[in-house]
Image 1 (tube, helix red, strand yellow):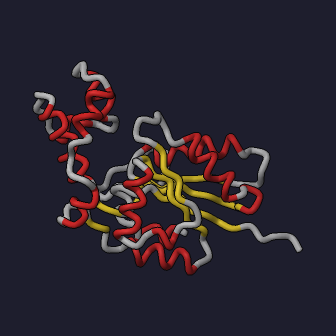
Image 2: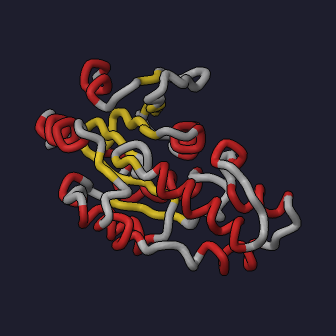
Length: 212
């Protein structure tokens, strides 16, 4: 009997499923402060290492300063990182609909696991893939993730996140598996109304349920 094909969603973690924006901003601005620079969260942009290099700070030196930040365990215990209120509800409903869920995060694997354990999120995901923040994009990791999911078993896969790279890796997946009957897409999470050209945007995860 021919195996029935399924649909899948691949989520980003930080600022998509959990609200870690303030922790990241505090960690990075304090890392710059330890090196003698005063920066504001609005200045940081997407790639902190590139921003550090614009100040003439080598990546290794910036890493050494960043490593002095509060641990994820401490920040979680202090309530500095919160889960978005709809996250569990949405993931539960998606799973109930038979949609396969996986996670693709740009972080230290140990940190990702700490966050998943603390918020009891790991149980929803078939696969969890984590890449180092220094990696230029998620493209290669997204392709490897889909290989694990077996592309021949997939009908449609969408990537969900709050950054452009979370979404546009679907293009690399589409090209890599062009020989399969697999369509790809992305959903941009812009909680303040931000949009990403060429992709549907939602203000909350609950809106994803309405789009599927």
